[in-house]
Length: 228
Image (cartoon, rainbow, N blue to C red):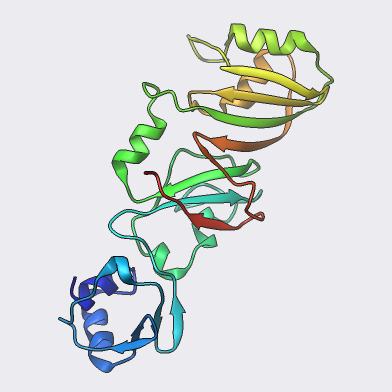
């Protein structure tokens, strides 16, 4: 891949901006200065990238997959209304790329959020047909017992919905902590299911999305992951 195209693919800037950078000799790849817009770069061999002496996040090509440990107080949106958007947590060059969240988490919901530029992967992970399991830890307002779990697994009718929705699994870690697994992603689904079962979610955290968790990440931290 030509250096100018590689820099564009890394979200460094427009083609003209990348051409200027490539010609001025300010680009370092793996610690070595590289110049010339048409100089060939092997993307898979790039470990470090610096421009003008400043480190740039190296993005896997052509597709990237990210696990973010989402903090509370961030909207899953490029155009947030009331809170900062989760995309502000990423480096500038990464934000310049076509990155999308895989599904959404409410502003007050924390935990695993997947980010990608792979539309097919996004569709596969969010389509009800594929039924990808998502595990949540919900803090309940009222103390609950096994009857709540049984109700959720048997299915509840959501307000303003004509279908019964059932949890894949439900168990109580303690009377105020519900572990709930669902395979769909309806709007506010966990909160609405718990409300339909006669309780209320005070705090919600996603522990797992498919095979991915964020247990090794501090709040607000993220990492690239492989889907292979």
